[in-house]
Amino acid sequence: MGFTERDEEREVEREIERGREREREREREREREREREREREKERERERERERERERERERKRERERERERERERERERERER
Image 1 (cartoon, rainbow, N blue to C red):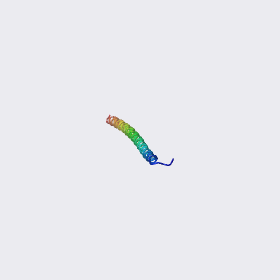
Image 2: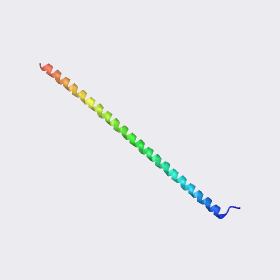
Image 3: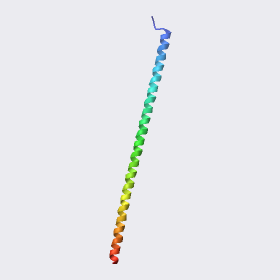
Image 4: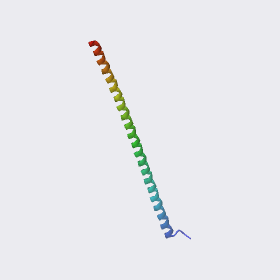
């Protein structure tokens, strides 16, 4: 029993199918990587939002401190006027 033409055709078909399967697997891996990158980007965006919120909070604190300082200054002015 030698290697027949039909055997050769089947082997070629198997090789083609293995190549297609490898390509499908590569595409699945690329999709998984794209999904991981989307998740990383969402996390970076959440972190940027947290940082913006921290900055807003720092600004509110600075504003409250400036307001307290203005109030102290007004109080000193009232004291001087007396």
